[in-house]
Image (cartoon, rainbow, N blue to C red; front, side, top):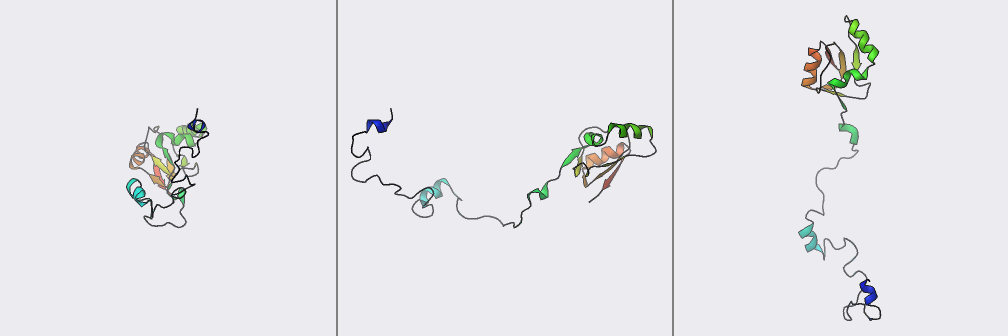
Amino acid sequence: YKKSRHLRGQISNGRGRIGKHRKHPGGCGNSGGQHHHRINFDKYHPGYFGKVGMRNFHLIKHGKVIPSVNVDRLWALVSEQTRQYYKEHTDKAPVIDVLKAGYMKVTGKGQLPEQPVIVKARYFTKEAEVKIKEAGGVCVLCA
């Protein structure tokens, strides 16, 4: 059983007669952090109060996001029929617009088939550029 059951019938419930059990003698919650509880806050929570850094009004969270696609996934952005068509008709190359598929950057993981292709994107890594050019393709930067 709980201690409270054991204390039934005792007058002050184990809280002592002299300094009575009052509601919140030190204040509720985090109160007094800069006043009477300062030692605890300074000792166990340094840097709790105050500010740091510059404020950024109108922070755009998605402003720094750059969705990227790997070289080995490039041909998945166009249909298999397109790939077969350009395999036979080697006089021209297909244009893969990475931006239309929702990507901005082309990164260099994986292998490209030996088939020329024109890739449009905002950013290319060096490795991706080398692989596309080795396959006989072209990298086109677009804003």
